[in-house]
Amino acid sequence: MLSPFRKLKAGMGSRSPSPSPSAQSTQAQSPAPTAGFPALEITRQICVLVSNLGSGALNVPGLQAAGQIGCQIIDIIQNMKDNEDACSSLIDRMNTLMNLVAEALPPDGASIDSLHIKADLKKDAEKLKQSLGKVHEILQELTSRSRIKKLLGSAGVAGEVTKCKELIDREIEAFKDSLRVGLESIITGQSSLTLKIDGLLPRDPPVPPKIFCGRDELVSELANLCCSGEQQNIAILGAGGLGKTSTALHVLHQIDVVKWYGKRTFFVGCDGVTTVDALALRILQIMQASTPSGENPVDALRSVLIDSSYTLLLLDNFESIWDFQRDHEAARGILQTISSVTATSLIITMRAANPPPGVQWTWHSTLSILSPEAARNVFLTINPMFCCGSSSGDEILSELLREVDYVPLAIHLLAQVSLDLTPQSTLRQWQKKKTQMLTLDQFTADRLESVEVSIALSINSLDTSGNSEAIQLLGMLCLLPDGLLQWQERLELIEERFDTA
Image 1 (cartoon, one colour):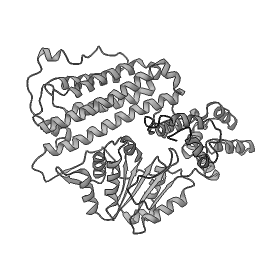
Image 2 (tube, rainbow, N blue to C red):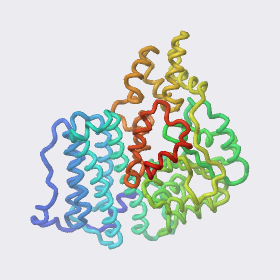
Image 3 (cartoon, rainbow, N blue to C red):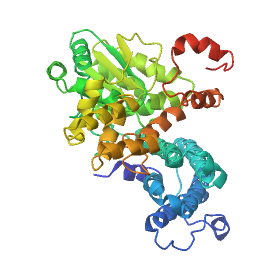
Image 4 (cartoon, rainbow, N blue to C red):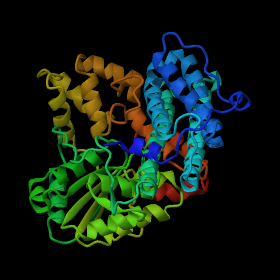
């Protein structure tokens, strides 16, 4: 059976003569192979191919520009020799994205017969060009010496690289989803189209982490709500690293929840999703549902949920789609659509202090930090030999846990990086490096492997253009050793100087 990508190719038309020499002269030129950088060179060749296809018979200027910008990004990465490890994952993502784009296009010299498909391609190509342009801009700033001095060491580099990875990931998901929608216009003679690309997304919820302390009562409370027989809309909120996803997964796997919903519990990661239609398609795919050709994905999702028995749907990291667009009407609308089906209960996790409006939330709360006892249990489960029975080791551990504010992610990372260190050495390292110490890899861009990357993601989600003083205010507050005492009472004083506080 033909893959979806090959079906898309088959519907786009047959081969036609190659572009004339005059047309070829405007195409991207492929430089000599880059010695020692095979991945870079392969990705560069794909970018050249995409650019040439866009400037040839397809005549899609946005596609041509996207390929050219991709080549420029590769040039920058090649010259960032001090940050090769930090950018290696960017190369992989660029390769994945441009491969996907090239695979979806007809061969060099072919044309697109359908005006509808060509219009969609132009729209997607323009978005692709804009996103790659942002990546190019970030990397250019990153290579500037003056810019480097302003970044906070490796954390600044990781935060900037994370921005680039998120932009590329969003384009990967957007292009996949646009291909799925495009297939509906190409494949005829079928009453429905199964939205399934094998191996793309997991069907079953991820297994919850085994090291999980201090949240048992909360998990039981939420599980009891989900099994009450009444519809629940639950929002688990809070800053990064508090364990929102872990808590939600433990609820999904709680024995009473499993008995109540059976196979009707679904985990949907919102990372990389930029549109509501894309999110609806992702949910349908994970549910292994189908939709009639041409139907709006959100309407199709509602129809599937209406025809289903009791369903528990977890939308993880919902801030990804919420923060991507400042106009929240569409994102709010899909939540309202899901909650309008009384047999469907909804859980979202979100980096926020308040849940999205427009939904009657039956439970919402910001996760608290762990208790000192739970924090200690987490640490010693990972690093049981840290204290070695000494009173000084116990005292140092208590001090370190206070220093990281009993935040689960920070505790996990601190326990990992101190496996080969004595308590005294760990304390000295902490006093010297602080949160820069809490990373499993100096150049990681994984939010679960670095506290500073997690913090960078939260800061990046701020509307700094509309709240220009937000970073300045946060920078001042972070200098206070214990935060701002009685901040709610002092907020009025802050607002006198910072209008957007």
